[in-house]
Amino acid sequence: MEEIYNNLTNEFNIAKSDIGLKGTSALTGLFNLFLCFFGYRYHRFLIAVAGFIVGAEASYRMLVSVTMDSAAKMLIYIIAGLVCSLLAYSFYRLGVVVLVFVATYKIVLPLITNYVASPYSMYIAIVAGLLIGFIALRLMRPVIIIATGLSGGITAVSAFGTMFGFTNSTVLLIVGIIIAIFGILFQFKNTVEQ
Image 1 (cartoon, one colour):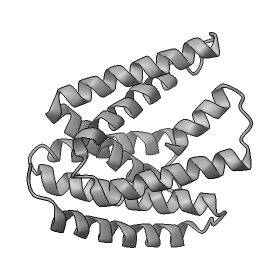
Image 2 (cartoon, rainbow, N blue to C red; image 1 turned 90 degrees about the vertical axis):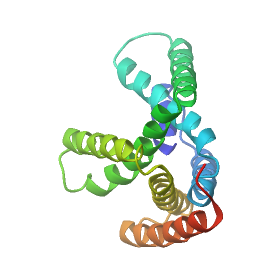
Image 3 (cartoon, rainbow, N blue to C red; image 1 turned 120 degrees about the vertical axis):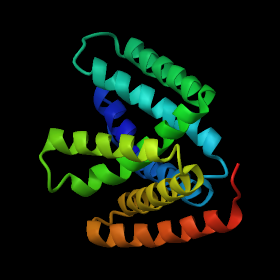
């Protein structure tokens, strides 16, 4: 979510105010805490959200170098996001792959960015996301719970860290993993196979 905010503010020359960044960080943190503790229970809704993110981000990447009116670009991003959201939700099994892909990508990319050169880190994160996404088709409940718990916990702590200006990535990762473990245990205890 933060990446989409950064892409949009860069694309439309919106000044990144401290209030806007803190507000975005707060929303990102709250949404990801929800994801961490309730990811499996609301995974059908999250499938639609993940589909929207994939569609909007893919259209952004395709149009980043195209010169056109910014309002038209925004409309294309929204339409692509909605189309992918509907497809992901309509085709449940595909949606599970998309949801787990996005969650895995969000975990893997930040972890390997410092160790692997720029375009290759993204490729590795994409392959990892697809691999875990297809494993999720066999082990749906545990993989969805673990993926949403880890992704939600780590991203929530990172977002709150950004909001409060805390930048020690090692501490943020450790706290994120601890929150993720609580979220995963909570989900396993309070959900049943759907």
